[in-house]
Image (cartoon, rainbow, N blue to C red; front, side):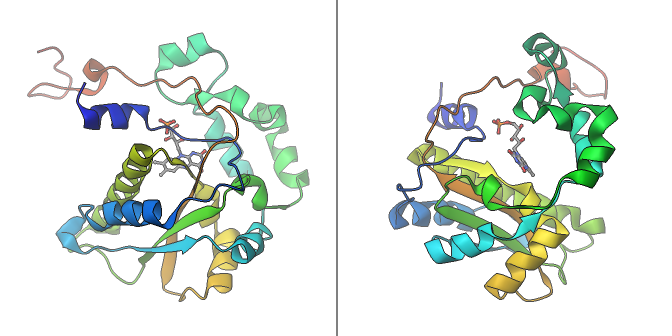
Length: 237
Ligand SMILES: Cc1cc2nc3c(=O)[nH]c(=O)nc-3n(C[C@H](O)[C@H](O)[C@H](O)COP(=O)(O)O)c2cc1C
């Protein structure tokens, strides 16, 4: 297998606590940022900034920001879940429902859970991570003629993947934390870090070294499932 494909296949989300005493070195961070630097972006706009958080005091302040679970999230999350390995293998997309608290995956309880769960500190999601990367973009700009700035957002995804693959190559684990871009959390982070109003958080990643095994059951569609030859729906070589 080629080296690049091996790194791509072995990259995975690390949803376990990280060792709080093992920060990611500046050298490794620089390489991860160098990978971001060379990401393809629409019209080479390089429509991103990265805020590196590796100061314990700042991490603590961020961790104190509160977020709350929404019913919308619970319901849409549920759509992606399987409840056995067999079901997941059959579907080939999504993740296992066992990753979530039981009350989050019971449609009958979702409204109540959302209503009654008090906002919790986002340190719960940071789980010992001593490094965060917050990727932002300027909401006043968009890629030329790109409706809804789809091309701009795709570009931010390229930045994400470049950084993730570089981290993987360096043996650094990573998890995307989408909830950090939720309005309430975003507002708290922006205020804390002095981020201008027009700059938005695209996504946040936590980086580090796992304090527990990270391997979990992952599925993908087969190439034939998503490939069409010369006409949509035409399968096979
Ligand atoms: C835009 C984006 C947002 C994501 N948000 C989260 C997140 O908030 N929490 C999380 O644990 N994983 C998040 N993920 C990771 C995906 O769930 C994960 O990539 C997918 O399930 C495939 O698993 P793998 O990364 O282990 O291959 C996100 C991934 C992407 C690309």
